[in-house]
Length: 489
Ligand SMILES: Cc1cc2nc3c(=O)[nH]c(=O)nc-3n(C[C@H](O)[C@H](O)[C@H](O)COP(=O)(O)OP(=O)(O)OC[C@H]3O[C@@H](n4cnc5c(N)ncnc54)[C@H](O)[C@@H]3O)c2cc1C
Image (cartoon, rainbow, N blue to C red; front, side):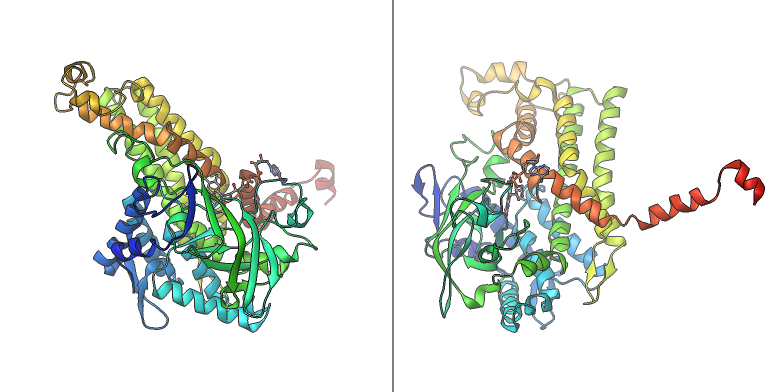
């Protein structure tokens, strides 16, 4: 059953080990770095309860669950899943990348082809299916860490100068395994229920002890998160930093200080081939990233809405070159949405009867994303001019009797209906998307969330399907030859 926001918030108070600013966090739901994001996620869960028709589905077992766990069987299922995910992004404006729907998509993909896991032993298939059903039926929030720490990218885990810098099996016991090491970055991990741990980067012979996939509850003993600076911390108000205070999902270095994982939570064990196969011989990678693209559509639309309102407020929207730049934004947004809808429309049904978004279009847009989002931000910056800085340091200048009249008099637009407060509010919102630490991190996120840009382009390369294009060129080439030869023929 889908759970309520309140149930979610209660589940986070489990004594997990999260460190920030040199201290252990007592309770993530009240700490200033994590309170905003936990409230946002709680709201998302409430939406599921408030709008069950849109947000839930009947599972294969006859239960009702959050649609994020759906295994799509038709184009209509994909559409219905997209609409539910889009509804969730309306709560976040596409600014929470690792909301619960992201990793849930991976698990729906895993569960749709559990035989891949059975190749390592029948028990791993059972473990995977049992956990999928548990997470689905209890509406669990899964985050993931699937990238080893950034130490020396020319080496794999076993070649690093310490055996347990990357996450590996330290000890095997009858009831489970002991995990030691670290993973690069867990987004949203601090406010999730379980973390999925694996390795999506290539491994080679000798790396077997790192070739794993398992889940771990965030409260597990020995599991530690070291969060980067919290962008919500120390902010004077939501008026001043509307996005940082609500949507900072936080990222954290993850350390496994001899964490016990029972066998039933292990899905791939010391198997290099299956560590890769779980992502790419099931639709997991495609379904997870289809969620990402659905979210990205909303985010780009939000950026465009900001640009449009800014130009209206500044009276520049009637100027043809400005309209041209808004047109550039429209083209970029249309490209992202068009790719998403094409991947859905051109989906195919795989051997397991799963509707898989067409990888040509899914990875096509992901290959462009690192530059496309940068282009979007650049145009918003260009259209905003210095207005994003012609704002008071905080809302307090609007309150202080000594300063408030100057605010009203000098920060304005030619539209009588727009107050100085309205103008500052809009420009502070824009700055939070394009200029603050929160905004900078989002640019980094879109460039790296699915791997470095060269990795995303590699997916686009492998999934385009060049045959039809090459055949077209060959047909053209064979339709003419050297004139002398043509005469002889
Ligand atoms: C905001 C954010 C959130 C993230 N959240 C998560 C998360 O929730 N879970 C998770 O598992 N991971 C997460 N990541 C990590 C992400 O998956 C990695 O950043 C990504 O896989 C790239 O690894 P890297 O950052 O070590 O970059 P590197 O692999 O070190 O690459 C950095 C740059 O080096 C160059 N380079 C490196 N190797 C090559 C090569 N072979 N060929 C050409 N150029 C190369 C490229 O210029 C590349 O852009 C997150 C990252 C960011 C930025």
